[in-house]
Image (cartoon, rainbow, N blue to C red; front, top):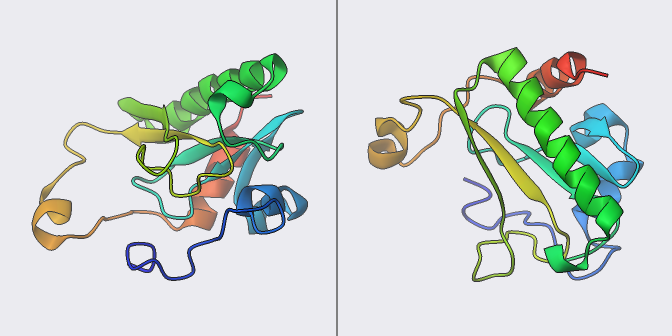
Length: 155
């Protein structure tokens, strides 16, 4: 609800304020980082749509997908595939929603730093709770999900 009400929403106008620039300087558990690559990293979404909702994010402060380098693009793709394999292995996800929200009109919550969502899905996971109860259910705490995914990530 804090996210929906806009409370504590991180600023994204500059690298200094950007959470995706700050998170890599934290330890993995504090930053909810699951995997680090050379040009990009994988972290849990602080406001997940489903347990295991990951984001693949370049280290570099870049807003638009057209601005990433070929190296960044290749690593974002590789980490996305590895994220899918890992989530399937540890939680038996039956499908995924994968995407990048670009700009305000595209639904980006943090517009200034590119991040790709990897959202696991299961048959029947959209139940009455979000429709009638106007809430989402999450069966795991973020720290538990982060540990499970970090330990399950293949080398």
